[in-house]
Image (cartoon, rainbow, N blue to C red; front, side):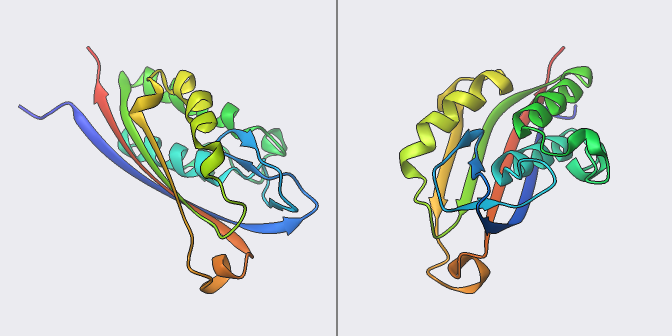
Length: 162
């Protein structure tokens, strides 16, 4: 019998630009640069959406919420995550746990990690202790080190509900 567990992986990268909001993990963080994108460009939530969609055998975030569709212009990525959760629910999957990694030189996001977990847990229908969010830098190397961009990685475990 095939196990009821599935794993998904997601990745997202965006440019940083001065004078726009910095949304990460569902919250706005004060910073002189923001994340550039069609939506609010929350790389954490975009990587998470891709991981969840992949785990349930569906297509990626760009397929479901294309940047060519004005409906998604400036949209709060928490809304995208809620829509992804509807897809999982329709396919009879629930979230087991989430593991996220953010790579950026600045701002330092460790002070915000618990707040992010508290925002995400009810959307994912899990407790905040089932969410791990880690922060790292690229040690001043590459586009991340030059503070030109930000990257997020997500790994998820989902399971079939009867």
